[in-house]
Each structure stands twice: as structure tokens, then as C-alpha cells.
Figure 1 (tube, rainbow, N blue to C red):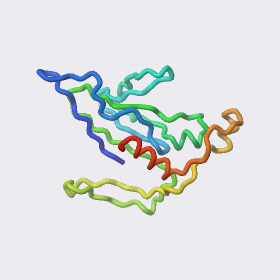
Figure 2 (cartoon, helix red, strand yellow):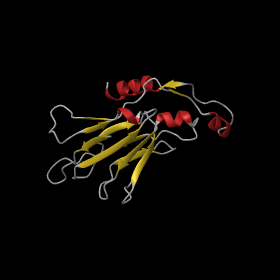
Figure 3 (cartoon, rainbow, N blue to C red):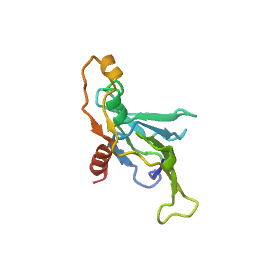
Figure 4 (cartoon, rainbow, N blue to C red):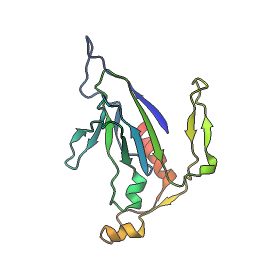
Length: 169
């Protein structure tokens, strides 16, 4: 789980950027990501099949469910990774609580971590993920998607490191 903050933009007597990226275009590396929504802030944008960025207005009482790269591979492309970005044009600070469901998580290795420079009451839940997990299309998904394997085997940890270096490097 990760808590991410997106500052609001001033509107009175200040700049109101039209393209101030809070988080650039990306897909997640795992299976699924669940993200909370604020009833009054539309910041999430997704790219549609025509390549256009469209806003994803929040629906009260719901979570956004983003499909990640590993589910795309497991499903042989029947499910596609959600390409998205965040642009908070609201004057309100947006707090995003994202829960990342990854591959081969060991429930016995759950620990609490206190980040450096944080008050003692701020703890992050960290689950040990098996970085050596091999991910490849499931046979049933290969059959359902036309009997052709669209993706080669991926090693979860290698894919994760590649994405992090690309996104934050």
C-alpha cells in the first residue's frame, strides 16, 4: 500500500496550469491496483483506444481497479494494463491510497515499516514479494485469445526493476 499526495493548484491570483502532471503516464507492474476516489476531485486520466487522454470522474463510494502488467501477461492480453496519469487541476490537495496486489505474496512475511523522517504513527504495510516468480500466459487464456501465445515469460522482479528505472530514473 502506498499513500501518495498530489498538491492542489492555486486558482485565485495564481497560476492554473492546464497540464501540470502529478504522475506521468504509466502502467503498474503487478496484477491489480485498487485506488480510492475523492467525490469532488477529478485528477485521474486514462488513455482510450484512440490514444486520447480522457478524465475518469470519481464515482462516490467506489474504488478504481487498474489492471497491471503481470495480469496482462497471465491473461495473454485478454486484460490490458491500464495506461494512466494524474493531473490534479483542483485547488484541493488530493490524497491517493493505492493498494498494489502483486504476484506470489507470502502472507507470513508481512511486516510494518516506519519510514525515515516520519512520525512514529506513520507505518507502511510491506509484504514480501517473490521477485523470482516467472509469469507467462496461462494455457486457458492462450486458448481463449486465439491459440497464439502473445507474451513471452517474464520474471516479476526484473520487470519491476525495469519499470522503476524507466519511471523514476
